Image 1 (cartoon, rainbow, N blue to C red):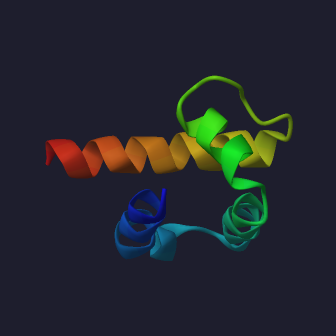
Image 2 (cartoon, rainbow, N blue to C red):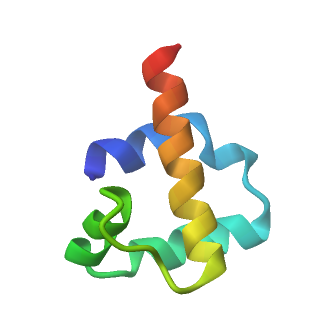
Length: 67
């Protein structure tokens, strides 16, 4: 997960608005097993802001991998 977050910080974090940056910080404050489940698609965050952040980071990772 560290690599995923580091890549996002390098490629996408600067484009976030303040609400999205707060959601990213809230994501980092979650327990690792829960975050892993979200990124593996086993479960989904209840909070819409966290779900949007997970989706954004996953999309960013796909974009980096393909491009």
